[in-house]
Image 1 (spheres, one colour):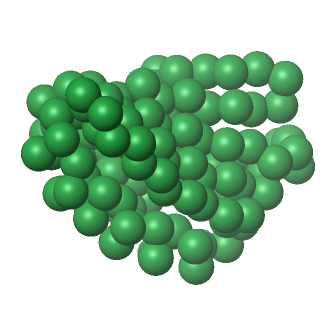
Image 2 (image 1 turned 30 degrees about the horizontal axis):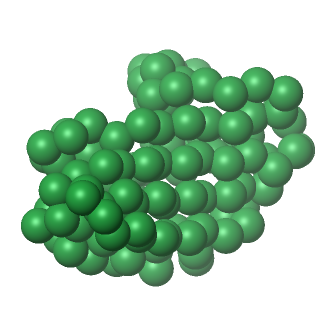
Length: 114
């Protein structure tokens, strides 16, 4: 498929009390992610205010690499983390020439056998 770098961005705005467990879980996932084939990098940042803003970014060398990761157990853990948060995050996938939302991950995971 495409061999253009792609990116997944997850942005949460959560109560400050929820930020520590979320960032802790994301840090654990980052360790695994960085060692995955095709991972070009990942980062985590937080901004504290009335709410905690958490930004988690993964960059992949190609869309095929990203798709493989979306089908992984590691992404399942990330999805479960997103579902348990009191506020749903905003998820964006920056692909070659287009930006998609969480429906992109659903489509990729549904085509698991394709």
